[in-house]
Amino acid sequence: MRTFASIVSTGLLTAALAWAQPTKTSGAEIRVLLNSACASCHRGAQAAGGLSLDSPAGVAKGGRSGSYDDWKLDDLRKRAAEIGIEGRSKMNKADLVEALRDH
Image (cartoon, rainbow, N blue to C red; front, side, top):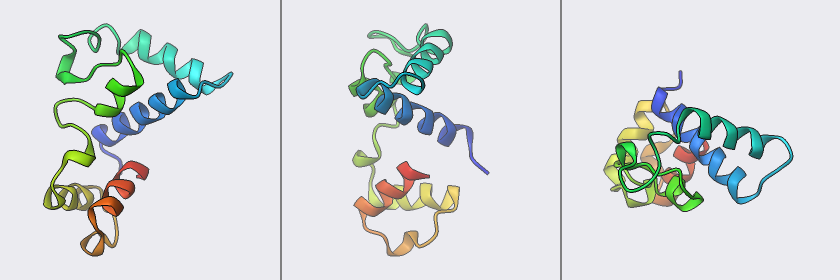
């Protein structure tokens, strides 16, 4: 079962990719969704939760929890356990980050 945070993370990653490489359907649709449902609180210097949707870089950086790249290995393993990623105890940091992003 996906948590709200993982659904939002997946949506934001998809949005960042769509923004960077817009397509005729998904990129435009995602931008419309983010602009109508999220942008009013997630723009500018006072973006809610520290998550700015002003640019692909802001989306990729994430909110206050930051990017998985900035997390410690133990924290990545705990997060992987929360969402049920198999084989996490044997993964290095790069593999955990990739698994968490792909979940």
